[in-house]
Length: 173
Image (cartoon, rainbow, N blue to C red; front, side):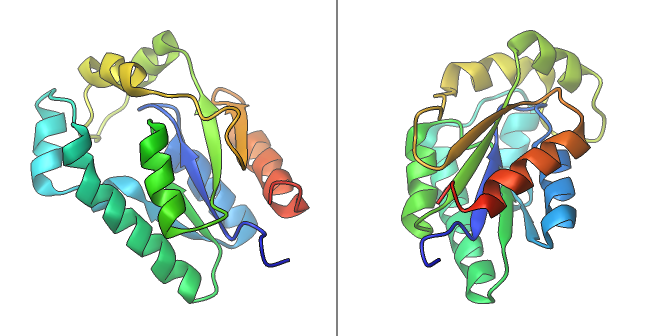
């Protein structure tokens, strides 16, 4: 099936569990994990760590790098899962431009749940003070092509099974 999704983005606001769910999905599907945070520039990491939200201009090179990495992984005939916030439609469209038939899994989470999760997370550069900016930038992907919305607080194994079934069914293509 030539139009079937070979890559998906696990997306949502900070604290929704993108990395955790993407890792579980990769283990379940035998896919290659691309951790979006690993592609941020040092300047962008410092900016976020200091509590300054990124602008669209700050994100452009990051999104271009993620598109190139998705293309590289797919060229090796692997399935790919990208953990990436992809908050705005234009960010998702940038990734879709790099990889046609790209799917998105939106981990839905309330502002209160995100604040709670981020406040208790250790070892991550994104402070809880940026949660509001994430919700300000969020443009829900619900209604866009090849999008599955799930509740981020569901158990990770349940989410991985649900996403794998959607991804593997061919109905998402």
